[in-house]
Amino acid sequence: MSEATITIDSRDEAVVLFGHRDQNLREIRNALGAQVVARGDTITIKGSDEQVDQGQRVLQQLRGLVARQGSLSLEDVRTILELVLHGGDRLQAGPAGDTAGGGEAAPSRFIRPRTDGQARYVRAMRDHDMTLCVGPAGTGKTWLAVGMAVSLLRQGAVKKIVLVRPAVEAGERLGFLPGDIVAKVNPYLRPLFDALHDMMDYEQVKRYMDNDIIEIVPLAFMRGRTLSNAAIILDEGQNTTISQMKMFLTRMGQGSKIIVTGDVTQVDLPRDVRSGLIDALHRFKDIERIALVYLDENDIVRHPLVSAVLKAYEEGGEKRSPDRKRR
Image 1 (cartoon, rainbow, N blue to C red):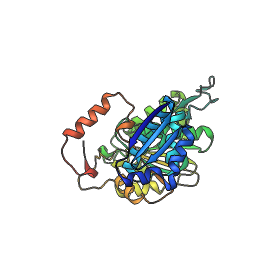
Image 2 (cartoon, rainbow, N blue to C red):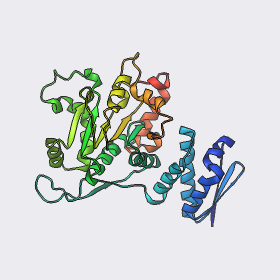
Image 3 (cartoon, one colour):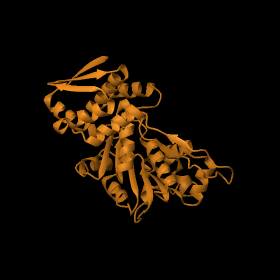
Image 4 (cartoon, rainbow, N blue to C red):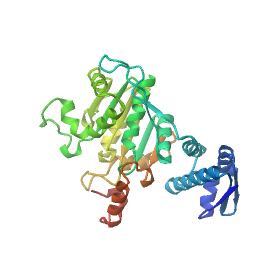
């Protein structure tokens, strides 16, 4: 039998981590099938090598969550347990049985969260009609949002996908660019297209766009619309103003889900303009039906050097207020 001891930093952390009448610890104990005992500022895990390793991973992730958001729900505990024990929720992308360009049925494709933070993000999108997710580059914010939208479309839970991104560099004035509206906004929506093409065949994406099942919309063109039975994704949400964010979120109709992603350390707005995403995170923190998900460097799934690059910039960059760090 193996054993590991974890020391808690403070009584306040222990109170949040253990839960009301130790309900979180009981949940962990039952899921692992191991002994999980709290005494004072320590937690002891006893069981097989695998059980002890899983217990340490669960508690490490839960402690990180407590440090970031200052609270912990039973659903948070169950989400992290699900990922550690079973790999988390799968999203089915690339509709099974659908034909690409009139040919044979496209194969069913599954995507799965690869970190505990990503698993919380997927669970939040499943359980809430509005989700705001912030995190650094490479944490899968956009990719998983598109995966969720495609999965909902496949299940018939929504009838269309709407992809939105602010074109900050062009000041939302896209008329001088050649081509139709899709061609004009294409450079700004490239990350969303890349995610779509990871999950669906090119011809299938084209056919869905031709049939208005997948719609590409610059943020400036959202005003006055109401979108029902749709999965609506706003990428690069940190580059919206407060009025733009309010306008976008109020486009939500019946049967729709809204997902907003962004990196609050990469704001490209003028210095005197406050980010609509940062503002929304403060406004919505006490609204239970809106999920706020924070990813960090532990959730980066790109090349390992991405974490090192981000850390180097954070340590050597200019000192700015947390709300207005810039590239």
